[in-house]
Length: 130
Image 1 (cartoon, rainbow, N blue to C red):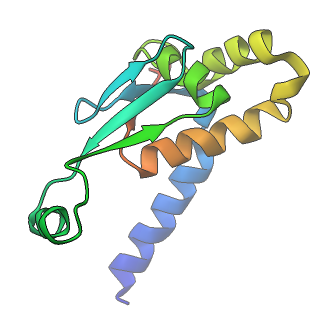
Image 2: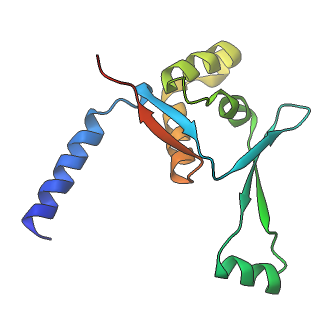
Image 3: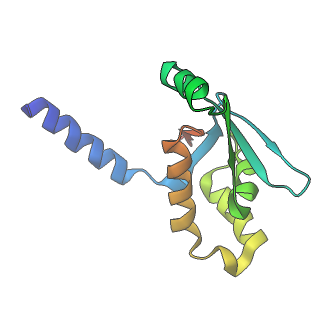
């Protein structure tokens, strides 16, 4: 690895460590549609595109659209992602709704948002610094 790449990697790691995830504002991706059923359970619909997915649909009878059913906490959290509320603010709503059942709240919540981000269901925008 070249010296420049090492320096960039170190700077990125330092930046990531200084970021406070609780200040991030999650925004749902426009790529995925979602819906809630009569019980309030959220389902995210993922369209399976691309040549490999098309082959799987034809040969293996795979669906054109996969459905991701969120559990109780996810079904509460996902509608709260409005592009205005920070992760901290969403956490306060979760704490108020689920009380002790949500603990340890913020480590779990941050991990959940990282997972949503990794799957491409959300993006982050950071709150402006004063």
